[in-house]
Image 1 (spheres, rainbow, N blue to C red):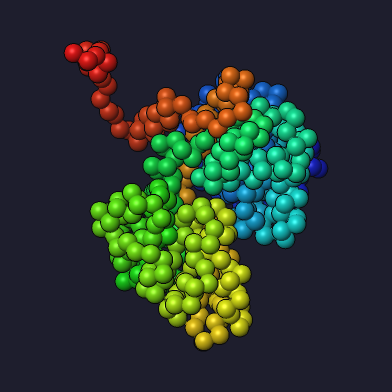
Image 2: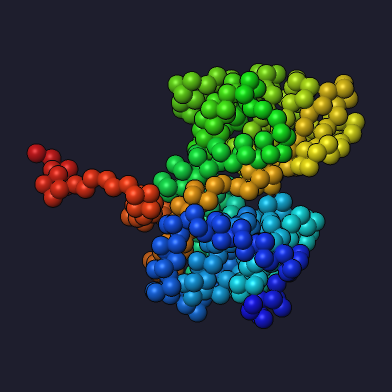
Length: 420
């Protein structure tokens, strides 16, 4: 164990490390793309002498990403991007591996934020962010901690929205790679990853069936597509609500009912919010919901359905099962909220499957190397993962599956580049 990491870190219980190591070993055994990148990083040492701060959902797959960045020569500090998704045994294991950790499961809001700030006090050269939590603090509260930052990589839709707003205002201090917008991220992570893990969290938490229920999917972006597809596969009747006309037409042509939330609120048994916006379900919707309706969120922040307005309509709130709160309404109805409105797939489950996060975290690793190699020419902008890196991750994934594909001939390439 690194003495430095042990003395600096703030975690719940170091004695939990053995269980954490087992979880990380299991995840890494199912992440062949990241294993390949780790081999390259060990040889090339792209981050030698640099400090990297990571803010992600702190569970086994994230832990392995941190170890891969560490293998590239970095001094790594990590914190959690959600208080309920942090796993204390994983934190303890990372400390034993020489990574400085500032994270605990379910700290109070003040401590949670202080742990994120502590992770930045290492004065990092590079960051990996989720929801732009690190970048937001660096820009709004502790700009002096950004003095060394060359750039970073962002994981989520929500984070990219915030970063692009900073860029538009001219306040963004360093370049950020929009990992979320890479093809291998939104095609596979957002669609297949969240599609499966949201229902993993729902079923583990409630022990209820999905088949036969009316599932309202709020938002039909990449995540919404995945959630709707999995709900249909589990036997649900799927309703989609949208504000984007093109996505609404797509949902209709994919075979789902499309309607305004006010109508869907009367029909839904389970509501899954995936918009990245706030108050998409609020007071007037709660007033018409069925008795026993269940709310859960698979967006980054716990603001997608308005909890204060739900509480205001209630005579009491009680925890009826782990990660399930019952709101008893004044007219006698009950509405249930899963995981306090936080990410249901992580706060009430183990998150995306390892094979999915293998591709996403491979993009994080190569994206971080890219921004470190090119931060001067990129400037203070949000940029996409270069297509060749995206394709590299996909090809490595195919190789790990034993799948081959065709390659264009020189004549075919020339034909595609000609106009005659």
